[in-house]
Image (cartoon, rainbow, N blue to C red):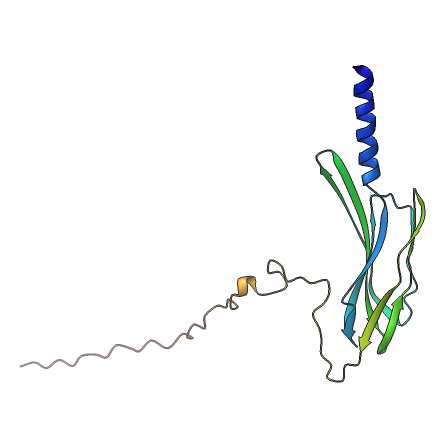
Length: 173
């Protein structure tokens, strides 16, 4: 009985560890944009411990903000998954087709690399400003609160001079 329990526990543990593969991915939002607008590049390591992150050289782009790092850990029915995300906000210097080269991260499994990504930057003669990739217009801090009109104090009339009471003329009879 004890051997069966140990064997079952070992198989369960190995399935949990096997199902949580380490992955290192990259995402770009948006992948096509107008010149003068920003894009967000995010590098995400899932189910691994990062020790050394090396971002790519963003040739053809200016780094507006970053690196911004966020991490999360989720436990569901005893299974633990964790992730670390490094984000950058970039602005293209000119129109054209650009590639985000692979980033490198040193994890317990060894060095991991992302795939290169293509970004298309179109000319913007009208100077159109697109929505920032990081703003999601959730719960009203950046946007209209429930699409309500702006609340303002009403314009009260300024104090007017109070008209003086007229004296009544009285006549004696």
